[in-house]
Image (cartoon, rainbow, N blue to C red; front, side, top):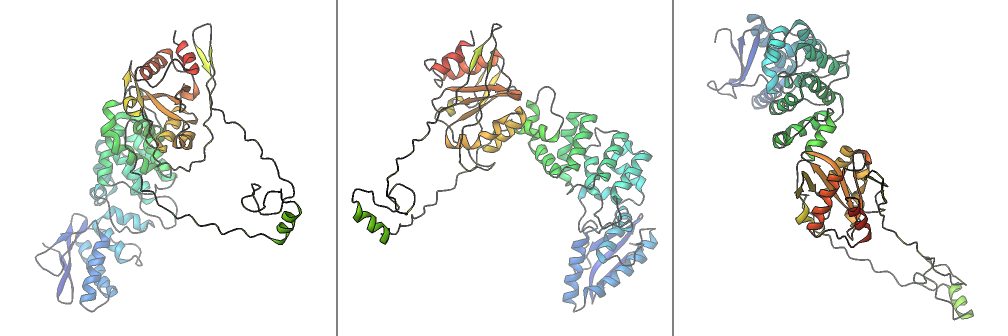
Length: 488
């Protein structure tokens, strides 16, 4: 091609620099004249190829880089390409800026060079002018304010070293199908002022996010994307939501939560997953306790009164100090199983006292698997009168239910692991409407809805009659009898 140059290391061709409209295409040749792989979006890979060629040609990378920079300057001048304003810009910046001119403009503004450019961003930053890049990114929404907002987002705020603002641009590109020009400007400016997100999106993640924001509409979509870009784990939460979206989207009903965390919890509660396989128990040998030694003081006390109990570890007093008087053991406080207090009212409704989680000391983490009672297989997934019963699989499920219900359900993990409580989620369609708390008997301890409010009588009737038909609950137990009495 006219105007192209080949940079050689020794006698072997290393890279071919091809001028195009306003940019230089960088092709790696790997020592063969008939090979040319376009690595314009991978400057670090080009540097690695040049380093390998320099080591084989017994020369230095600095010398090879000097030749490449000179060739880049000549080829860029033939196609009106980008030229660096800072002579101290390294080889990585020269290669990326010459191949992707809008990326080079961010380097002139003080941004640090990128080792690799995401595929979705290549057609945008390969343009010579910001207006052309905005039209590639946003189509008909690329107004003058949009062009300025994109330029500000790419360059970033501040004067210190910073990466180019591709992360903010990725969120705006993901919302291009639902956002108009004004909302794109507002989103880009908000992300620019608040600092760049901690990472950008891949091309597959951008495509996966678009159906999510398309369902929400322009106003809520802009808020969701802004929250994803301004919170610490927002990008990861958005990607996790987009992965489960194809599965749960057909089952979503009514108005969805507007916040990112609330929307993810709502959608994730519809996905039933098995807990991780438990690891085999580790058998540990119990250390043998050394025989207790009788001190001289203990021997004197034993000779003085042989009726006294022998002191030491087995004396029952918890230490090895001599005791001249045997202490009576303190009686332990009886443990009471919490019970719900059901109070009928003249209007046929009832109120109940919220019961906190039973005391438990089992160590748990969000991924801890929850034990299933023997009747779980017959009840899990059962539906009656539009109410579906779902048993949680892990502690993370309980924590998610607690956030959705705005209650203390998320604190029941240790109690469920120890078996002193069993929780059942109550779903009306695709929405979590309440939670049922059973003791090991099983008896109903409490059954509450959003913010610990009483559930409707129809929901309680569906749950109680279903559990009675499955022979989980018995009316003969006093507490259950009072719960069934509230249905009349």
